[in-house]
Length: 558
RNA sequence: CGGGGCGUAGCGCAGCCUGGUAGCGCACUCGCUUGGGGUGCGAGUGGUCGACAGUUCAAAUCUGUUCGCCCCGACCA
Image (tube, rainbow, N blue to C red; front, side):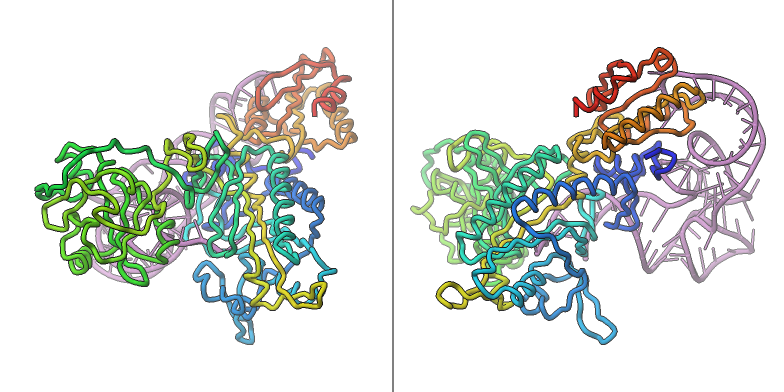
Protein backbone atom coordinates (compact mmCIF):
# COMPACT_ATOMS: atom_id res chain seq x y z
CA UNK A 1 0.00 0.00 0.00
CA UNK A 2 1.19 3.46 -0.88
CA UNK A 3 0.84 6.16 1.73
CA UNK A 4 -0.65 8.46 -0.90
CA UNK A 5 -3.44 5.93 -1.49
CA UNK A 6 -4.43 5.15 2.08
CA UNK A 7 -6.25 7.60 4.32
CA UNK A 8 -4.05 8.24 7.35
CA UNK A 9 -5.01 11.59 8.87
CA UNK A 10 -2.24 12.10 11.42
CA UNK A 11 -2.47 14.95 13.87
CA UNK A 12 0.36 17.09 15.08
CA UNK A 13 -1.40 17.93 18.30
CA UNK A 14 -3.41 15.73 20.64
CA UNK A 15 -7.15 16.43 20.77
CA UNK A 16 -7.94 17.90 24.17
CA UNK A 17 -10.59 15.43 25.26
CA UNK A 18 -8.40 12.36 25.04
CA UNK A 19 -6.95 11.16 28.32
CA UNK A 20 -5.75 7.57 27.94
CA UNK A 21 -2.44 7.10 26.12
CA UNK A 22 -3.97 4.62 23.69
CA UNK A 23 -6.80 7.05 22.94
CA UNK A 24 -4.42 9.94 22.28
CA UNK A 25 -2.19 7.87 20.03
CA UNK A 26 -5.03 6.27 18.10
CA UNK A 27 -6.38 9.73 17.34
CA UNK A 28 -3.03 11.31 16.53
CA UNK A 29 -1.84 8.45 14.38
CA UNK A 30 -5.04 8.35 12.38
CA UNK A 31 -6.49 5.00 13.54
CA UNK A 32 -9.89 6.19 14.80
CA UNK A 33 -12.20 9.17 14.98
CA UNK A 34 -14.93 9.77 17.51
CA UNK A 35 -18.51 10.14 16.31
CA UNK A 36 -20.18 10.65 19.70
CA UNK A 37 -19.68 9.49 23.28
CA UNK A 38 -18.68 5.85 23.10
CA UNK A 39 -19.03 5.63 19.33
CA UNK A 40 -15.93 5.38 17.18
CA UNK A 41 -15.19 5.30 13.50
CA UNK A 42 -12.39 2.87 12.75
CA UNK A 43 -10.19 4.30 10.01
CA UNK A 44 -8.30 2.16 7.47
CA UNK A 45 -5.20 1.77 9.63
CA UNK A 46 -7.31 0.82 12.67
CA UNK A 47 -9.36 -1.60 10.65
CA UNK A 48 -6.19 -3.36 9.50
CA UNK A 49 -5.15 -3.87 13.11
CA UNK A 50 -8.57 -5.24 14.07
CA UNK A 51 -8.55 -7.55 11.10
CA UNK A 52 -5.21 -8.95 12.11
CA UNK A 53 -6.43 -9.52 15.65
CA UNK A 54 -9.55 -11.17 14.32
CA UNK A 55 -7.51 -13.43 12.08
CA UNK A 56 -5.64 -14.65 15.16
CA UNK A 57 -8.94 -15.12 17.00
CA UNK A 58 -10.33 -17.21 14.15
CA UNK A 59 -7.25 -19.37 13.92
CA UNK A 60 -7.21 -20.15 17.60
CA UNK A 61 -10.95 -20.62 17.94
CA UNK A 62 -11.08 -22.90 14.93
CA UNK A 63 -8.15 -24.81 16.42
CA UNK A 64 -10.25 -25.84 19.44
CA UNK A 65 -13.06 -26.97 17.20
CA UNK A 66 -15.19 -23.88 17.53
CA UNK A 67 -17.41 -23.05 14.56
CA UNK A 68 -17.93 -19.52 13.34
CA UNK A 69 -21.43 -18.33 12.58
CA UNK A 70 -23.29 -15.05 12.62
CA UNK A 71 -26.22 -13.97 14.74
CA UNK A 72 -28.58 -11.00 14.35
CA UNK A 73 -27.86 -7.83 16.29
CA UNK A 74 -31.58 -7.12 16.58
CA UNK A 75 -33.42 -9.42 18.96
CA UNK A 76 -37.07 -10.01 19.81
CA UNK A 77 -37.83 -9.25 23.46
CA UNK A 78 -39.58 -12.54 24.20
CA UNK A 79 -36.39 -14.55 24.37
CA UNK A 80 -34.85 -12.12 26.82
CA UNK A 81 -38.07 -12.18 28.81
CA UNK A 82 -37.87 -15.95 29.10
CA UNK A 83 -34.51 -15.80 30.85
CA UNK A 84 -35.60 -12.82 32.93
CA UNK A 85 -32.85 -10.55 31.69
CA UNK A 86 -35.28 -8.29 29.86
CA UNK A 87 -36.18 -7.04 33.34
CA UNK A 88 -32.96 -7.49 35.27
CA UNK A 89 -30.63 -5.71 32.87
CA UNK A 90 -32.07 -2.22 32.88
CA UNK A 91 -30.82 0.85 31.09
CA UNK A 92 -27.73 -0.78 29.65
CA UNK A 93 -29.86 -2.54 27.05
CA UNK A 94 -30.87 -0.58 23.97
CA UNK A 95 -34.57 -1.20 23.47
CA UNK A 96 -36.86 -0.31 20.62
CA UNK A 97 -40.11 -1.29 18.98
CA UNK A 98 -40.56 -2.45 15.45
CA UNK A 99 -43.32 -1.12 13.15
CA UNK A 100 -45.85 -3.55 14.58
CA UNK A 101 -45.09 -2.28 18.07
CA UNK A 102 -43.25 -5.44 19.01
CA UNK A 103 -40.58 -5.01 21.73
CA UNK A 104 -37.07 -5.53 20.44
CA UNK A 105 -33.57 -4.96 21.76
CA UNK A 106 -30.08 -4.66 20.40
CA UNK A 107 -27.78 -7.48 21.35
CA UNK A 108 -25.39 -6.76 24.21
CA UNK A 109 -24.43 -10.43 24.38
CA UNK A 110 -25.82 -13.59 22.82
CA UNK A 111 -26.49 -16.24 25.46
CA UNK A 112 -30.21 -16.06 24.77
CA UNK A 113 -30.01 -16.28 21.00
CA UNK A 114 -27.36 -18.98 20.95
CA UNK A 115 -29.39 -21.00 23.44
CA UNK A 116 -32.55 -20.42 21.39
CA UNK A 117 -30.78 -21.97 18.42
CA UNK A 118 -29.45 -24.86 20.47
CA UNK A 119 -32.92 -25.48 21.90
CA UNK A 120 -34.29 -26.00 18.41
CA UNK A 121 -31.47 -27.85 16.75
CA UNK A 122 -29.74 -29.98 19.35
CA UNK A 123 -31.71 -33.06 20.34
CA UNK A 124 -29.27 -35.79 21.18
CA UNK A 125 -26.11 -36.29 23.17
CA UNK A 126 -24.77 -37.43 19.81
CA UNK A 127 -24.90 -33.79 18.64
CA UNK A 128 -22.66 -32.71 21.50
CA UNK A 129 -20.42 -31.05 22.39
CA UNK A 130 -20.70 -27.91 20.30
CA UNK A 131 -18.77 -24.64 20.43
CA UNK A 132 -20.22 -21.80 18.41
CA UNK A 133 -18.71 -18.37 18.02
CA UNK A 134 -19.05 -15.15 16.13
CA UNK A 135 -17.11 -11.92 15.75
CA UNK A 136 -19.81 -9.34 15.75
CA UNK A 137 -21.02 -5.96 16.94
CA UNK A 138 -22.41 -5.62 20.44
CA UNK A 139 -24.38 -2.66 21.73
CA UNK A 140 -24.57 -1.55 25.32
CA UNK A 141 -25.89 1.78 26.49
CA UNK A 142 -23.03 2.35 28.91
CA UNK A 143 -23.64 4.76 31.74
CA UNK A 144 -20.22 6.23 31.17
CA UNK A 145 -18.28 5.48 28.02
CA UNK A 146 -14.64 6.39 28.56
CA UNK A 147 -10.98 6.10 27.68
CA UNK A 148 -11.45 6.16 23.93
CA UNK A 149 -11.97 2.73 22.51
CA UNK A 150 -11.69 1.01 25.89
CA UNK A 151 -15.30 1.47 26.96
CA UNK A 152 -17.70 2.16 24.13
CA UNK A 153 -21.39 1.76 23.49
CA UNK A 154 -20.86 -0.18 20.29
CA UNK A 155 -17.97 -2.57 19.90
CA UNK A 156 -16.87 -5.74 18.18
CA UNK A 157 -16.68 -8.85 20.29
CA UNK A 158 -15.63 -12.38 19.72
CA UNK A 159 -18.18 -14.32 21.72
CA UNK A 160 -18.33 -18.08 21.93
CA UNK A 161 -20.67 -20.48 23.63
CA UNK A 162 -20.15 -24.11 24.55
CA UNK A 163 -22.83 -26.76 24.89
CA UNK A 164 -22.02 -29.96 26.72
CA UNK A 165 -23.82 -32.95 28.15
CA UNK A 166 -22.18 -32.78 31.55
CA UNK A 167 -20.19 -30.61 33.91
CA UNK A 168 -17.12 -32.64 32.97
CA UNK A 169 -17.74 -31.67 29.36
CA UNK A 170 -18.07 -28.03 30.40
CA UNK A 171 -14.78 -28.29 32.27
CA UNK A 172 -13.16 -29.43 29.03
CA UNK A 173 -14.72 -26.68 26.91
CA UNK A 174 -13.72 -24.15 29.55
CA UNK A 175 -10.18 -25.45 29.63
CA UNK A 176 -9.94 -25.37 25.83
CA UNK A 177 -11.04 -21.75 25.87
CA UNK A 178 -8.65 -20.76 28.63
CA UNK A 179 -5.78 -22.31 26.69
CA UNK A 180 -6.87 -20.72 23.41
CA UNK A 181 -7.10 -17.36 25.15
CA UNK A 182 -3.58 -17.72 26.47
CA UNK A 183 -2.35 -18.42 22.94
CA UNK A 184 -4.35 -15.53 21.50
CA UNK A 185 -3.11 -12.91 23.94
CA UNK A 186 0.45 -14.17 23.76
CA UNK A 187 0.34 -14.04 19.95
CA UNK A 188 -1.01 -10.49 20.15
CA UNK A 189 2.08 -9.52 22.08
CA UNK A 190 0.32 -8.64 25.33
CA UNK A 191 1.38 -8.97 28.92
CA UNK A 192 -1.65 -10.41 30.71
CA UNK A 193 -2.93 -12.35 33.70
CA UNK A 194 -5.74 -14.84 34.08
CA UNK A 195 -7.59 -13.99 37.28
CA UNK A 196 -10.60 -15.22 39.21
CA UNK A 197 -13.57 -13.00 38.61
CA UNK A 198 -17.08 -12.35 39.74
CA UNK A 199 -19.65 -14.04 37.47
CA UNK A 200 -21.99 -11.12 38.17
CA UNK A 201 -25.21 -10.98 36.20
CA UNK A 202 -23.97 -13.75 33.92
CA UNK A 203 -24.73 -16.24 36.62
CA UNK A 204 -22.89 -19.47 36.98
CA UNK A 205 -20.36 -20.55 39.52
CA UNK A 206 -16.94 -19.92 38.06
CA UNK A 207 -15.51 -17.18 35.94
CA UNK A 208 -12.11 -15.90 34.99
CA UNK A 209 -10.98 -12.69 33.39
CA UNK A 210 -7.95 -12.04 31.25
CA UNK A 211 -6.35 -8.81 32.28
CA UNK A 212 -3.69 -6.69 30.60
CA UNK A 213 -1.80 -4.47 33.05
CA UNK A 214 -2.18 -0.79 32.16
CA UNK A 215 -2.67 2.49 33.96
CA UNK A 216 -5.67 3.13 31.72
CA UNK A 217 -7.49 0.07 33.04
CA UNK A 218 -10.70 0.21 35.01
CA UNK A 219 -10.14 -2.88 37.13
CA UNK A 220 -7.63 -3.88 39.73
CA UNK A 221 -6.31 -7.34 40.38
CA UNK A 222 -4.54 -8.81 43.38
CA UNK A 223 -1.58 -11.03 42.50
CA UNK A 224 0.55 -13.34 44.58
CA UNK A 225 3.89 -13.87 42.92
CA UNK A 226 4.70 -16.74 45.25
CA UNK A 227 1.82 -19.14 44.62
CA UNK A 228 0.22 -17.55 41.57
CA UNK A 229 -3.07 -16.60 43.23
CA UNK A 230 -4.67 -13.94 41.03
CA UNK A 231 -8.10 -12.40 41.43
CA UNK A 232 -10.06 -9.31 40.62
CA UNK A 233 -10.09 -7.12 43.75
CA UNK A 234 -13.88 -7.37 43.53
CA UNK A 235 -13.49 -10.77 45.12
CA UNK A 236 -9.80 -11.11 46.01
CA UNK A 237 -9.26 -12.54 49.47
CA UNK A 238 -6.41 -11.26 51.58
CA UNK A 239 -5.05 -11.09 55.08
CA UNK A 240 -4.30 -7.54 56.16
CA UNK A 241 -1.08 -7.10 58.15
CA UNK A 242 -1.69 -8.10 61.77
CA UNK A 243 -2.36 -5.32 64.21
CA UNK A 244 -0.09 -5.38 67.27
CA UNK A 245 -1.70 -7.16 70.24
CA UNK A 246 -2.92 -4.74 72.93
CA UNK A 247 -3.70 -5.72 76.46
CA UNK A 248 -6.30 -3.11 77.25
CA UNK A 249 -8.76 -3.56 80.03
CA UNK A 250 -12.26 -2.73 78.94
CA UNK A 251 -13.10 0.90 79.60
CA UNK A 252 -15.17 3.72 78.22
CA UNK A 253 -13.17 6.69 76.99
CA UNK A 254 -14.48 10.20 76.60
CA UNK A 255 -13.98 11.28 72.96
CA UNK A 256 -15.81 14.58 72.59
CA UNK A 257 -16.74 15.41 68.99
CA UNK A 258 -14.38 12.70 67.72
CA UNK A 259 -16.34 10.61 65.27
CA UNK A 260 -14.24 9.13 62.48
CA UNK A 261 -11.58 6.51 63.03
CA UNK A 262 -9.04 9.08 61.95
CA UNK A 263 -10.22 11.64 64.49
CA UNK A 264 -10.38 9.21 67.40
CA UNK A 265 -7.10 7.65 66.38
CA UNK A 266 -5.42 11.04 66.45
CA UNK A 267 -7.12 12.01 69.72
CA UNK A 268 -6.16 8.82 71.58
CA UNK A 269 -2.80 8.46 69.82
CA UNK A 270 -3.61 4.89 68.82
CA UNK A 271 -3.07 3.73 65.24
CA UNK A 272 -6.18 3.02 63.10
CA UNK A 273 -5.57 -0.73 62.95
CA UNK A 274 -6.64 -0.95 66.60
CA UNK A 275 -10.11 0.32 65.80
CA UNK A 276 -13.30 -1.27 64.59
CA UNK A 277 -15.06 0.78 61.94
CA UNK A 278 -18.81 0.30 62.23
CA UNK A 279 -20.88 1.11 59.17
CA UNK A 280 -24.64 0.86 59.18
CA UNK A 281 -26.21 -0.02 55.84
CA UNK A 282 -29.78 -0.72 54.86
CA UNK A 283 -30.27 -3.90 52.86
CA UNK A 284 -33.45 -5.10 51.25
CA UNK A 285 -33.95 -7.33 54.26
CA UNK A 286 -33.27 -4.69 56.87
CA UNK A 287 -30.36 -2.90 58.54
CA UNK A 288 -26.93 -4.48 58.77
CA UNK A 289 -23.96 -3.30 60.78
CA UNK A 290 -20.79 -3.91 58.77
CA UNK A 291 -17.57 -4.06 60.77
CA UNK A 292 -14.06 -3.67 59.39
CA UNK A 293 -10.77 -2.81 61.00
CA UNK A 294 -10.03 0.90 61.18
CA UNK A 295 -7.23 0.78 58.64
CA UNK A 296 -9.26 -1.25 56.13
CA UNK A 297 -11.87 -0.27 53.57
CA UNK A 298 -15.22 -1.98 53.39
CA UNK A 299 -15.64 -3.66 50.01
CA UNK A 300 -19.22 -3.04 49.03
CA UNK A 301 -19.38 -5.78 46.42
CA UNK A 302 -18.14 -8.37 48.84
CA UNK A 303 -20.71 -7.25 51.40
CA UNK A 304 -23.53 -7.26 48.88
CA UNK A 305 -22.75 -10.85 48.03
CA UNK A 306 -23.58 -11.68 51.64
CA UNK A 307 -26.49 -9.39 52.39
CA UNK A 308 -27.81 -8.49 48.92
CA UNK A 309 -28.26 -4.98 47.61
CA UNK A 310 -27.86 -2.24 50.17
CA UNK A 311 -27.40 1.46 50.59
CA UNK A 312 -25.67 3.46 53.30
CA UNK A 313 -27.90 4.45 56.19
CA UNK A 314 -28.72 8.09 56.66
CA UNK A 315 -27.74 9.88 59.86
CA UNK A 316 -31.32 9.89 61.13
CA UNK A 317 -31.65 6.15 60.51
CA UNK A 318 -28.52 5.45 62.53
CA UNK A 319 -29.93 7.32 65.49
CA UNK A 320 -33.32 5.68 65.14
CA UNK A 321 -32.08 2.12 64.71
CA UNK A 322 -29.10 2.13 67.05
CA UNK A 323 -30.10 4.82 69.49
CA UNK A 324 -26.93 6.81 69.14
CA UNK A 325 -25.61 9.27 66.59
CA UNK A 326 -23.28 8.18 63.82
CA UNK A 327 -19.66 8.32 64.91
CA UNK A 328 -20.14 6.61 68.23
CA UNK A 329 -21.72 3.34 67.17
CA UNK A 330 -20.04 0.03 67.90
CA UNK A 331 -20.78 -3.69 67.73
CA UNK A 332 -21.29 -4.29 71.44
CA UNK A 333 -24.81 -4.95 72.62
CA UNK A 334 -26.33 -4.51 69.19
CA UNK A 335 -29.26 -6.55 68.06
CA UNK A 336 -29.13 -5.65 64.37
CA UNK A 337 -27.54 -8.12 61.99
CA UNK A 338 -23.76 -7.84 62.15
CA UNK A 339 -21.31 -8.82 59.43
CA UNK A 340 -17.68 -8.49 60.41
CA UNK A 341 -14.43 -8.78 58.55
CA UNK A 342 -12.45 -11.89 59.49
CA UNK A 343 -9.44 -9.80 60.46
CA UNK A 344 -11.37 -8.65 63.54
CA UNK A 345 -11.59 -12.14 65.02
CA UNK A 346 -8.21 -11.67 66.61
CA UNK A 347 -7.06 -8.74 68.66
CA UNK A 348 -8.35 -6.17 71.06
CA UNK A 349 -10.03 -3.08 69.67
CA UNK A 350 -11.52 0.33 70.22
CA UNK A 351 -14.92 1.13 68.80
CA UNK A 352 -17.91 3.34 69.42
CA UNK A 353 -19.47 2.88 72.87
CA UNK A 354 -23.00 3.38 71.55
CA UNK A 355 -23.06 6.46 73.74
CA UNK A 356 -22.61 9.97 72.40
CA UNK A 357 -19.00 11.20 72.62
CA UNK A 358 -17.69 7.94 74.07
CA UNK A 359 -15.68 5.09 72.64
CA UNK A 360 -15.08 1.69 74.17
CA UNK A 361 -11.57 0.37 74.60
CA UNK A 362 -10.67 -3.30 75.03
CA UNK A 363 -13.22 -4.97 72.80
CA UNK A 364 -12.61 -8.60 71.90
CA UNK A 365 -14.46 -10.57 69.25
CA UNK A 366 -16.80 -13.33 70.48
CA UNK A 367 -16.25 -12.31 74.12
CA UNK A 368 -17.83 -8.88 73.65
CA UNK A 369 -19.75 -9.20 70.44
CA UNK A 370 -20.65 -11.80 67.88
CA UNK A 371 -21.06 -11.46 64.13
CA UNK A 372 -21.14 -13.34 60.86
CA UNK A 373 -17.50 -13.55 59.79
CA UNK A 374 -16.54 -12.89 56.20
CA UNK A 375 -13.76 -11.30 54.19
CA UNK A 376 -15.39 -7.93 53.46
CA UNK A 377 -12.39 -5.62 53.26
CA UNK A 378 -10.72 -4.41 50.06
CA UNK A 379 -7.52 -6.29 49.30
CA UNK A 380 -4.54 -3.96 49.23
CA UNK A 381 -0.96 -4.22 48.10
CA UNK A 382 1.08 -5.54 50.99
CA UNK A 383 -1.69 -7.79 52.33
CA UNK A 384 -0.83 -11.46 52.65
CA UNK A 385 -2.04 -14.16 50.30
CA UNK A 386 -4.66 -16.39 51.93
CA UNK A 387 -3.18 -19.45 50.23
CA UNK A 388 0.51 -19.13 50.94
CA UNK A 389 1.10 -16.03 53.01
CA UNK A 390 3.10 -14.37 50.26
CA UNK A 391 2.88 -10.64 49.69
CA UNK A 392 0.06 -9.53 47.41
CA UNK A 393 0.59 -6.94 44.72
CA UNK A 394 -2.30 -4.94 43.30
CA UNK A 395 -2.21 -3.85 39.67
CA UNK A 396 -4.50 -1.79 37.49
CA UNK A 397 -5.61 -3.72 34.42
CA UNK A 398 -7.69 -3.67 31.26
CA UNK A 399 -10.14 -6.55 30.91
CA UNK A 400 -9.43 -8.08 27.50
CA UNK A 401 -11.34 -11.32 27.80
CA UNK A 402 -13.50 -13.38 30.09
CA UNK A 403 -14.77 -16.92 30.43
CA UNK A 404 -17.84 -18.09 32.34
CA UNK A 405 -19.22 -21.42 33.37
CA UNK A 406 -22.94 -20.90 32.95
CA UNK A 407 -24.30 -24.35 33.69
CA UNK A 408 -28.02 -24.45 32.97
CA UNK A 409 -28.86 -20.83 33.69
CA UNK A 410 -29.96 -20.26 30.10
CA UNK A 411 -30.69 -23.75 28.85
CA UNK A 412 -33.38 -24.48 31.42
CA UNK A 413 -35.57 -21.38 30.92
CA UNK A 414 -35.16 -21.58 27.15
CA UNK A 415 -35.85 -25.33 27.19
CA UNK A 416 -32.60 -26.26 25.54
CA UNK A 417 -32.72 -29.97 26.34
CA UNK A 418 -31.13 -33.04 24.84
CA UNK A 419 -31.74 -36.74 25.24
CA UNK A 420 -28.94 -38.61 26.97
CA UNK A 421 -27.86 -42.22 26.39
CA UNK A 422 -30.72 -43.40 28.57
CA UNK A 423 -33.34 -41.42 26.73
CA UNK A 424 -33.55 -38.95 29.59
CA UNK A 425 -34.21 -35.32 28.77
CA UNK A 426 -31.56 -33.04 30.32
CA UNK A 427 -30.62 -29.38 29.98
CA UNK A 428 -27.50 -28.43 28.05
CA UNK A 429 -24.53 -27.44 30.19
CA UNK A 430 -23.23 -24.16 28.88
CA UNK A 431 -20.28 -21.82 29.01
CA UNK A 432 -19.72 -18.44 27.43
CA UNK A 433 -16.49 -16.74 26.49
CA UNK A 434 -15.71 -13.24 25.26
CA UNK A 435 -12.83 -11.25 23.83
CA UNK A 436 -12.82 -7.60 22.81
CA UNK A 437 -10.51 -7.12 19.80
CA UNK A 438 -10.50 -3.32 20.18
CA UNK A 439 -9.41 -3.70 23.78
CA UNK A 440 -6.59 -5.93 22.64
CA UNK A 441 -5.50 -3.15 20.28
CA UNK A 442 -5.79 -0.49 22.96
CA UNK A 443 -3.98 -2.62 25.53
CA UNK A 444 -1.23 -3.32 23.01
CA UNK A 445 -0.74 0.43 22.58
CA UNK A 446 -0.91 1.06 26.31
CA UNK A 447 1.82 -1.50 26.82
CA UNK A 448 3.92 -0.57 23.79
CA UNK A 449 4.54 3.10 23.13
CA UNK A 450 7.18 5.76 23.57
CA UNK A 451 7.36 9.53 23.30
CA UNK A 452 7.22 9.33 19.51
CA UNK A 453 4.18 7.12 19.19
CA UNK A 454 2.95 3.55 18.95
CA UNK A 455 5.22 0.52 18.85
CA UNK A 456 3.05 -2.30 17.54
CA UNK A 457 3.74 -5.92 18.29
CA UNK A 458 4.62 -7.47 14.92
CA UNK A 459 1.63 -9.80 14.91
CA UNK A 460 -1.02 -7.08 14.97
CA UNK A 461 0.68 -4.10 13.32
CA UNK A 462 -1.29 -2.61 10.42
CA UNK A 463 1.70 -3.27 8.16
CA UNK A 464 4.84 -5.35 8.59
CA UNK A 465 7.25 -2.85 7.11
CA UNK A 466 7.22 0.81 6.17
CA UNK A 467 9.48 1.94 3.33
CA UNK A 468 10.64 5.55 3.62
CA UNK A 469 12.08 6.97 0.40
CA UNK A 470 13.29 10.25 1.86
CA UNK A 471 13.74 12.28 -1.29
CA UNK A 472 11.03 11.72 -3.85
CA UNK A 473 12.85 13.95 -6.33
CA UNK A 474 15.79 11.59 -6.49
CA UNK A 475 15.28 9.15 -9.36
CA UNK A 476 17.57 6.52 -7.89
CA UNK A 477 15.70 6.61 -4.57
CA UNK A 478 12.41 6.03 -6.32
CA UNK A 479 13.81 3.26 -8.43
CA UNK A 480 15.15 1.40 -5.38
CA UNK A 481 11.97 2.05 -3.41
CA UNK A 482 9.81 0.60 -6.16
CA UNK A 483 12.07 -2.39 -6.53
CA UNK A 484 12.04 -3.18 -2.80
CA UNK A 485 8.31 -2.58 -2.61
CA UNK A 486 7.68 -5.07 -5.40
CA UNK A 487 10.02 -7.68 -4.01
CA UNK A 488 8.70 -7.48 -0.46
CA UNK A 489 5.07 -7.55 -1.54
CA UNK A 490 5.93 -10.62 -3.59
CA UNK A 491 7.22 -12.18 -0.38
CA UNK A 492 3.76 -11.61 1.12
CA UNK A 493 4.80 -8.83 3.43
CA UNK A 494 2.26 -6.10 4.11
CA UNK A 495 4.14 -2.97 3.07
CA UNK A 496 3.39 0.68 3.55
CA UNK A 497 5.50 2.89 1.31
CA UNK A 498 5.59 6.58 2.14
CA UNK A 499 5.53 7.88 -1.43
CA UNK A 500 4.40 11.37 -0.43
CA UNK A 501 6.48 14.31 -1.56
CA UNK A 502 7.19 15.25 2.04
CA UNK A 503 10.40 16.16 3.77
CA UNK A 504 12.35 13.46 5.57
CA UNK A 505 11.41 14.84 8.99
CA UNK A 506 7.70 14.56 8.28
CA UNK A 507 8.07 10.97 7.13
CA UNK A 508 10.11 10.02 10.18
CA UNK A 509 7.63 11.63 12.55
CA UNK A 510 4.63 9.99 10.94
CA UNK A 511 6.34 6.60 10.73
CA UNK A 512 7.23 6.62 14.42
CA UNK A 513 3.73 7.80 15.34
CA UNK A 514 1.98 5.11 13.30
CA UNK A 515 4.28 2.53 14.83
CA UNK A 516 4.96 -0.04 12.12
CA UNK A 517 7.65 -2.27 13.64
CA UNK A 518 10.23 -2.14 10.84
CA UNK A 519 11.28 0.88 8.80
CA UNK A 520 13.36 0.66 5.65
CA UNK A 521 14.92 4.06 5.15
CA UNK A 522 16.14 5.13 1.73
CA UNK A 523 18.41 8.15 2.02
CA UNK A 524 19.79 9.68 -1.13
CA UNK A 525 23.46 9.21 -0.20
CA UNK A 526 23.04 5.63 0.98
CA UNK A 527 21.04 4.71 -2.08
CA UNK A 528 23.77 6.13 -4.32
CA UNK A 529 26.12 3.61 -2.69
CA UNK A 530 23.60 0.79 -3.02
CA UNK A 531 22.71 0.87 0.68
CA UNK A 532 19.56 1.25 2.73
CA UNK A 533 18.89 1.28 6.46
CA UNK A 534 16.68 -1.19 8.27
CA UNK A 535 15.48 0.34 11.50
CA UNK A 536 13.69 -1.24 14.44
CA UNK A 537 10.85 0.96 15.65
CA UNK A 538 11.15 -0.22 19.23
CA UNK A 539 14.89 0.08 19.77
CA UNK A 540 15.51 2.75 17.13
CA UNK A 541 18.55 0.74 16.11
CA UNK A 542 19.37 0.85 12.42
CA UNK A 543 21.62 -1.32 10.30
CA UNK A 544 22.91 -0.44 6.86
CA UNK A 545 22.57 -3.21 4.35
CA UNK A 546 22.98 -3.43 0.62
CA UNK A 547 19.81 -3.20 -1.42
CA UNK A 548 20.21 -6.79 -2.56
CA UNK A 549 20.25 -8.06 1.02
CA UNK A 550 17.10 -6.38 2.21
CA UNK A 551 14.62 -9.11 1.37
CA UNK A 552 16.80 -11.83 2.87
CA UNK A 553 17.41 -9.73 5.94
CA UNK A 554 13.79 -8.92 6.78
CA UNK A 555 12.63 -12.43 5.92
CA UNK A 556 15.06 -14.01 8.34
CA UNK A 557 14.28 -11.61 11.17
CA UNK A 558 10.51 -11.91 11.01
C1' C B 1 -27.78 9.16 38.06
C1' G B 2 -24.46 12.54 41.64
C1' G B 3 -20.03 15.88 41.50
C1' G B 4 -16.50 18.83 38.49
C1' G B 5 -14.69 20.95 33.84
C1' C B 6 -15.13 22.48 28.79
C1' G B 7 -17.85 24.02 23.96
C1' U B 8 -14.67 30.23 19.38
C1' A B 9 -11.89 27.40 11.69
C1' G B 10 -9.90 20.38 10.67
C1' C B 11 -6.39 20.31 15.51
C1' G B 12 -4.37 23.25 19.73
C1' C B 13 -5.75 27.83 21.87
C1' A B 14 -6.47 33.55 22.97
C1' G B 15 -10.50 37.01 23.21
C1' C B 16 -15.35 36.88 27.66
C1' C B 17 -14.02 39.60 33.82
C1' U B 18 -14.74 45.53 31.81
C1' G B 19 -20.55 44.44 25.48
C1' G B 20 -18.76 47.98 19.95
C1' U B 21 -14.50 45.41 12.95
C1' A B 22 -13.62 37.49 15.32
C1' G B 23 -7.87 36.61 16.28
C1' C B 24 -3.05 33.47 16.88
C1' G B 25 -0.13 28.83 15.91
C1' C B 26 -0.53 24.36 13.20
C1' A B 27 -3.09 22.09 9.14
C1' C B 28 -5.11 23.17 4.07
C1' U B 29 -4.51 25.87 -1.28
C1' C B 30 -1.04 28.52 -4.73
C1' G B 31 4.05 30.31 -5.83
C1' C B 32 9.09 30.23 -4.80
C1' U B 33 12.55 27.76 -1.51
C1' U B 34 14.39 23.47 1.02
C1' G B 35 15.60 18.09 0.90
C1' G B 36 18.11 12.79 6.97
C1' G B 37 13.83 14.29 12.38
C1' G B 38 7.18 18.34 11.59
C1' U B 39 12.35 23.75 6.12
C1' G B 40 11.91 29.05 5.09
C1' C B 41 9.42 33.26 2.72
C1' G B 42 5.11 35.30 0.47
C1' A B 43 -0.04 35.24 -0.96
C1' G B 44 -4.71 32.88 0.13
C1' U B 45 -9.14 29.53 1.66
C1' G B 46 -11.92 28.37 5.81
C1' G B 47 -16.14 30.70 11.48
C1' U B 48 -24.56 30.92 12.05
C1' C B 49 -18.27 31.94 18.42
C1' G B 50 -22.77 24.46 20.36
C1' A B 51 -28.32 25.75 20.11
C1' C B 52 -32.55 28.61 21.69
C1' A B 53 -34.57 32.63 24.31
C1' G B 54 -33.83 37.24 26.97
C1' U B 55 -31.37 42.14 28.33
C1' U B 56 -29.26 46.11 25.14
C1' C B 57 -28.81 51.04 20.14
C1' A B 58 -25.27 46.89 19.95
C1' A B 59 -23.93 40.11 22.57
C1' A B 60 -18.45 35.35 21.35
C1' U B 61 -18.66 38.61 25.79
C1' C B 62 -24.23 39.76 30.38
C1' U B 63 -28.80 36.51 32.04
C1' G B 64 -31.83 32.05 31.57
C1' U B 65 -32.83 27.42 29.34
C1' U B 66 -31.07 23.49 26.59
C1' C B 67 -27.77 20.17 23.88
C1' G B 68 -23.00 18.00 23.45
C1' C B 69 -18.12 16.32 25.04
C1' C B 70 -14.37 15.06 28.87
C1' C B 71 -12.95 13.69 33.98
C1' C B 72 -14.22 11.59 39.14
C1' G B 73 -17.90 8.54 41.48
C1' A B 74 -22.26 5.18 41.13
C1' C B 75 -23.39 1.53 37.50
C1' C B 76 -21.22 -2.19 34.22
C1' A B 77 -23.36 -9.31 29.84
